[in-house]
Length: 96
Image (cartoon, rainbow, N blue to C red; front, side, top):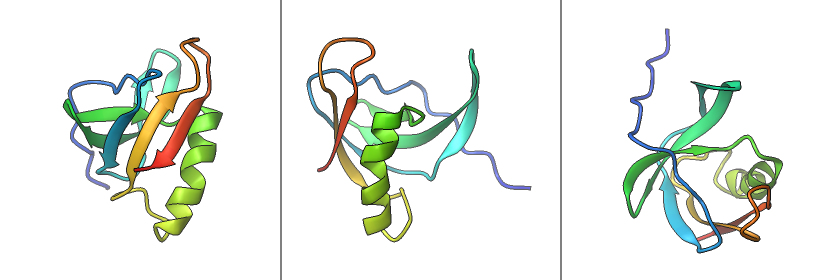
């Protein structure tokens, strides 16, 4: 049986101001109020946090970067932000 990743302390909140993080785990699932959700651990300015990766805009931004990184998420350095302040605005994912 695979070892469970240690649960980081908080969810990363992404707004219109860019935040730079480094991915420190491969994706895994956590139970949320909507059921299982894919997440990965990131290290950022506020320490180790969870990044939810189920949104289409995050997935589409991450996929080419993952492919460039040999099919792995771990080690990616990302600059993340929302396109606008709207709660449903798409995420902008860039290599940091």
